[in-house]
Image 1 (spheres, rainbow, N blue to C red):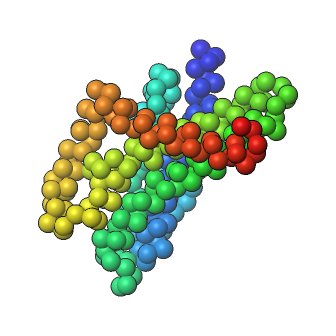
Image 2: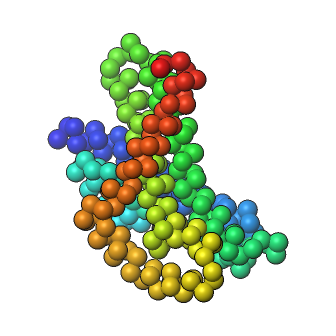
Length: 224
């Protein structure tokens, strides 16, 4: 029971923070391109209460943490209106950049966390084990969660970000097919998750990026 509680504490903070940053990044990019919808609705904030989705931000991540499986989730989508973009911004290009901003923010967090992990492993070596393991495991949780979120969201199945990125490179007449597919997107995701297909798809890039992200700080800190 104690191990479960420690796991919840250690993973809950990275999960909620990373999901919120992901959504805020969508709104921030839209705002940079001229659309202030998210700002007007009070969604350009890191306050979790403005973004919490009971199922995606609390219940599902908590279940996955307790079960010891890969942890991911979602928050309430940050709204944007591509037709509010500045005149010099192509609507399809702008929508792609807004979609890409979420996974990019997760990759940035994972990359920064890899430096924290390797730095802590070197600087805290010899410290009491509770301090050493608390800091290093928290940093590792940030890396894994954000790599999972980035990889998951880049899968081109509506309503995931990858589908909106893919739409940019397909002829406009395909948009309606993605819109139709989006109605069943959540069901498709649940089936893929339940059958283990999703884990197989996501863990390949997660493991690859994890090794690459750790290699860079290890080379710089001279711990290889």
